[in-house]
Image (cartoon, rainbow, N blue to C red; front, side, top):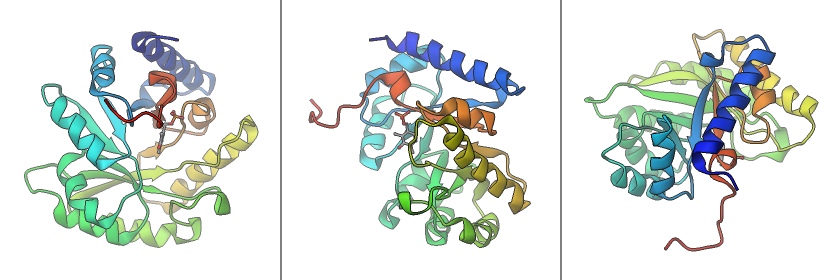
Length: 230
Ligand SMILES: *Cc1c(COP(=O)(O)O)cnc(C)c1O
């Protein structure tokens, strides 16, 4: 078992090596620490190592941690499935939402973003693995969705996000990430973000242009969904 400081150092080294291996500047790949199911104390430890961006999947859990960690300057990203009755809280409490896959959700986030806050940074989640995954917009529908979202006020469309079907085959990993990169290029919009790559496939994602890698297990250890929180 590694401590959080050791894991943060290892993940940063993996990111640096993967970027260098594909001739990219390591500074262009940012680390999003995925802290779902982790206690606030774990985020505090990662903060002490210089980590500032945290990704959460479950709204109530995220809001509780935000309250507990209100003394820290953190940037919160929402990366989980979105129900329309949750958009107001997302618009009020997050800087980024990576998992938007339909126009209605983007419209609500735009309407509900408080005027005192900067525009909400948004990624569109794309289903790059076809049948295997249910969330994300279909590649064929992406251009229309992106065009409509780019027109909404109070949002800043930054790019695309995907969670490809898990595989241990590096060539298959890269093919899925390459699809997302190509979809972004084809849109012809001014987008700077590819949110792709997790603990097991961050190298393949970086080779295909990831700008955010979303890392949970490699930073915080395996998640234990079985135990109720104490
Ligand atoms: C849980 C999660 C991650 C992190 O996955 P790990 O394999 O633990 O690194 C990344 N992205 C999303 C959308 C997730 O739900």
